[in-house]
View 1 (spheres, rainbow, N blue to C red):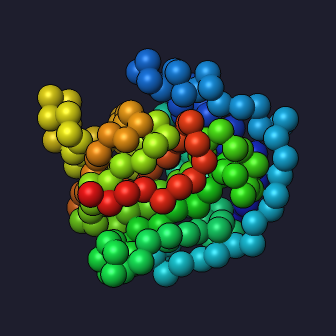
View 2: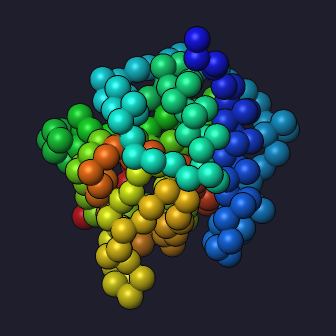
Length: 200
């Protein structure tokens, strides 16, 4: 029987992944994370979208992400998965092939008003098209790999694998495409909680 991991346990596992990354951007995000024990908890009703079945076919994790990936897989049916886009705005393939669930956000389950911590799932070959938002962002690929593009061509247009970091400044346009297997990504924002990104 799968073990259910609480929001605080997932938060601690996520923070541990970030803490062990060598990049300065990751260290900066880690230092800015709140103490989850000092934040309120607002349990969310589970919402299981059909796309979540793809979590069983995600690509490989690495040692640094393995424990969090296993916790996500074990707890995925108890999370409040969301797909905030509409097919007419972004395309049916993306709407049916991507989803997120929050660990810490303005509405919970851990009440966090200055940023967010969430998990993103992308099915094989699905593109999250170019978009931007006001909060600064850190992606950590947990399992699988993505093709990453930003307006900064000197650093992007490369594959990012499990255990690797993607950093976006506020309003920096970016896009990712999952590789041959489904992808799990740890997504952190700072400087604002959830907002609908602008599709470019």
